[in-house]
Image 1: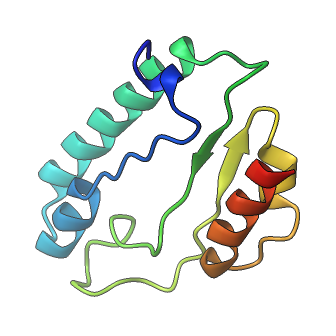
Image 2 (image 1 turned 120 degrees about the vertical axis):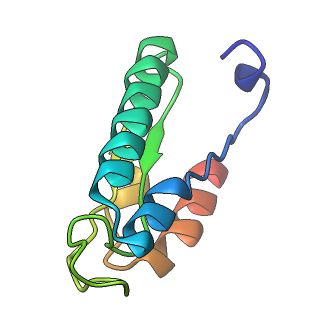
Length: 108
């Protein structure tokens, strides 16, 4: 986190959950979900709750229903913690609202 703290915004994309879901492989899906869970737990220990905001979002569901290869229609929430969390999430009703909300929160 020392190098990440030099930036106003750090983006991490994790595609393995999507790939495992499309592969319909429950063992792989469980493994990558455990991997991203470990990553997030570690990340949370490194964040400064007074300064840092963590936003977790996805563009669609997939790994929760491995019976289909396509994206599911399961609602996908955005979750945020930190000083900008409320500013970012307050007006978001769709994933398309996230980028404008992030930009507005940074310019406030």
